[in-house]
Image (cartoon, rainbow, N blue to C red):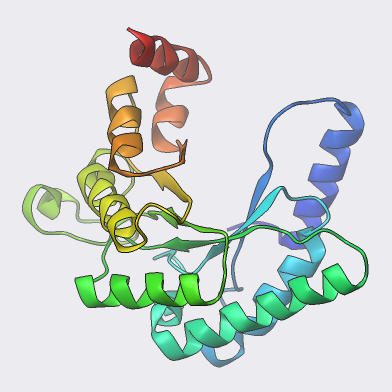
Length: 226
């Protein structure tokens, strides 16, 4: 839950005003509102894309959050194809207006079947998108995850192995030509290297960063160098 895209834009602008030379890559994650029907979801994504395009180094198009009811229906081929096409059109319009084309990456769930994943990867490639983010949190409650009783997605250790499997499969399906941001359960240098070895071009951390703090990055890099 958050205050919406307009609040986000204000915060990003305020940060850049305070830190005009701050280094780093700014990726902005967009999704539909909880109340918006799936049939009208594309409208929300286009609105958010237009709002953040000038501020983002890349836009993560999130169709996989388990906390937004029915959002994962957008992972079906027909609605996904319509969404990718609409955002491509907005990027085309930006280029015609003399603006830069914003890299768009599709953020997917770890709970896809092999057929679903293959179909999505094929569509991303056909749509000339810039990459994929693998993966969001998992709703799986089998095996080691059976003890988690609360609803919603599991992050951290419960998703680590599955996210690595998805990264490896995307890498194989695209012959390593599609950039992948690997995310899920990364807490050590070994975990980070695992994602890179599977085919990730970049990695993201979230749960580990929350529990370990900013020094986590320095420790991870030191572990990867040793």
